[in-house]
Image (cartoon, rainbow, N blue to C red; front, side, top):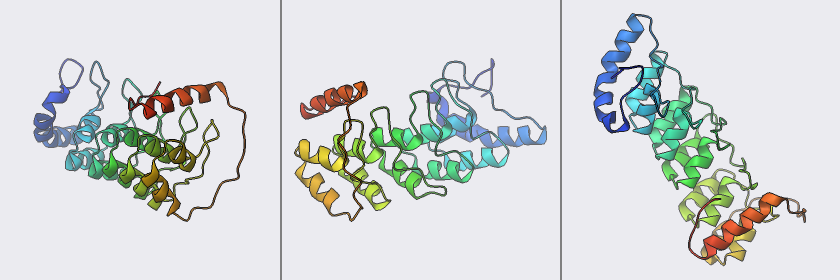
Length: 232
């Protein structure tokens, strides 16, 4: 498993899962910490286990003292990887093991934001109900919250999970639009109705000057209207 200064490839995840128990036990006995990283992606054993949803292995490695906070080449932690791949139980194990729900990757995104972008409902649920809970009002470079992103991609399941855990439908992004206003502008009638069912205090209405990044957001939304959803 550990050879040439790096880890096995992602395709070896199941084999790794079978071998990690013995490996981690030997490491503990010998006082060694196998926090080595793969050559290309800079993943650790915990990161491979988390990405593959191997919850028992994640727990065992953390119990033996393997690091939960190391980052890969793109700045992702094990929590980012588990969240991206919708590994709800692994997300819970990582948070319980001390993983930071506020840590951001090289793109400035938290695990919750990564999970929302991937429509990873199980991971989102685990993050917003865990102890500690992920911040539902964290924003991306456009000022868009996870709820706003969920509205822009019209994901009603994610929207409900976030609403049930305190997400604010009236939080304005850098363009001055809230998730509710986006649902109205994009004519997402069912989602507008879904948002209006929630009794969430409204944020003060403002008419901010649009910064340059809001122009990019408008381009993104125009693309969403045409059915070609992507981020710039």
